[in-house]
Amino acid sequence: MAYEQKTRPTPTSAAEFIAAVADPKRRADAEAASALLTEATGEPPVMWGTSIVGFGAYHYRYASGHEGDAPLVGFSPRKGNLVFYLSGCDEERADLLARLGKHKAGKGCVYVNRLSDVDAGVLKQMAAASAASLRERYPEG
Image (tube, rainbow, N blue to C red):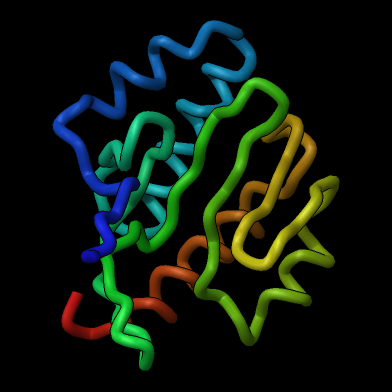
């Protein structure tokens, strides 16, 4: 049975998605995050699935044969926090996270309550490093 990827680009407008975020503070953070990630990656925002705003894309293929597409970087303005998808900045990750500010981190995600809790410059560095790393690792895009 073939695996069908659930999260992929959609025709939904990222700007309309962000404008529909109910909480005004979370919406303002999402607008700022979108501008920051656009600047960091040079890519426009695109909706991936129903709740992820992605920037750029890459195609991955594992040794197991599993393959798919994913955004280079992305974020989701969830009710409890902003989730940033920054899976590619491996070498610099620990140093950047140490300088980021108040956050929680998983393997490829960074969770922040408010954008004002973190250093936007460091977040931008993380996004740029993640995008560059993934472009290098997966050049076929």
